[in-house]
Length: 161
Image (cartoon, rainbow, N blue to C red; front, side, top):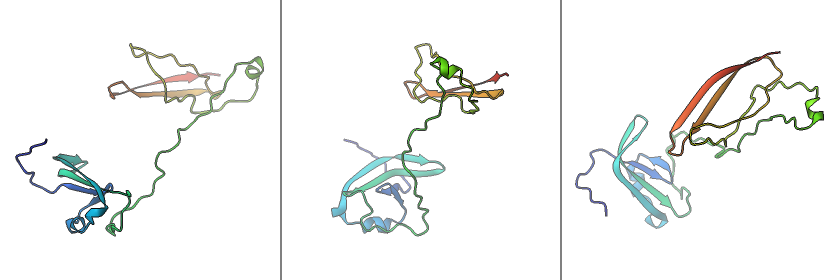
């Protein structure tokens, strides 16, 4: 059981089905029979430049607004949600016919893969074909380790005629 001996000084962040509510009169007017749960975080919470003394998160049974009116000054944004993973074309030259093809390859994104795993030393071998377009190409490698720490490496290579 959590026992907090000191009350925090300022207002908490109040969420109603994930939507911030800044008018506490609206919170008091909520129908308690429509509320499934209330989650309380009694610790100081920082979100960008905003500072709140805790978080109160109300969730309804139907996970909808249940008649709750959003502040008319609020910016409501529609978004696509999770997007499908992008796939980039990468040629394959497995057969003699494919290697003899005279179709030029002018790709600028030469290789992209979300699932490259390294060995214990952090090394991995990748293989891809370059573009037929001569020039300098930037390589950007980004990833996360098993602990969630980010790492990156950048370098340049050149394709000559």
